[in-house]
Image (tube, rainbow, N blue to C red; front, side, top):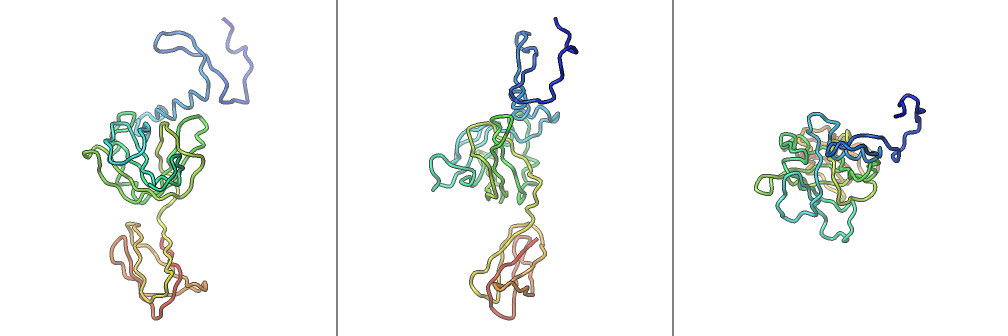
Amino acid sequence: MSRMKLYPNDLDVQGGDRLIGTDITDNSTKNYQIEEIAKYFAQSGAADPTRTGFQYNYAGTYSNQTIASGEFRYQIDPTSPTIYGWANVTGIAISKINRNNVDVSPVIPLIVNEILKLTDVDSSASNSYGIYRVNSQSLISNEKAYLLPLTHRGSSGAPSAEVLTISLSGLSSRSFVYNQSIASDTWVITHNLNSYPSVTVVDSSGNVVVGAVTYNSVDQITINFTAAFSGNAYLN
């Protein structure tokens, strides 16, 4: 057998490059493509020793079906075409148990009002993804799964029937823009930020207007002004 150190180093690693290894099932020597190895790590979360990643197997679209362990289903806008895109996804139903057999339910309440990235793991490139804000969460499927209503924020590619990875995007969702299209001296704003945000109001002419802000709850405010006008309120 040739000595490995005699082979030249490849400084331009590509997905189609191959490595030699041993198959665990029969100890036979085989070639392994780098992009297939990358796909395995992405789909299994094997690079994460705790196995707490959000990897799930695609099971179809959701309309009150039972969600099996390790599965997810997309909730789709009913007016969408048969071949839907990321922008048509209005929610996602996921099992409490991910495909690595780990209970992720303690994490679910923490992602409400946060920004998630949904990535199709169908190749090492992983160029198909959607970015969403999680609006709320509720138990479904005999309390063995969650339904997460989503608001689409951006995407690339299109969803497919593959393994899905769900991850926090790292983008902040703690902001809200409210448009008051009809002139009024009282604005009631439901923002669902679960906080008491700072407020900046700008009228339709671009002038900053100061009003009296009342925090009705962690998800709603009322602003009273001395005169009626239209414009935008920026909350963060």
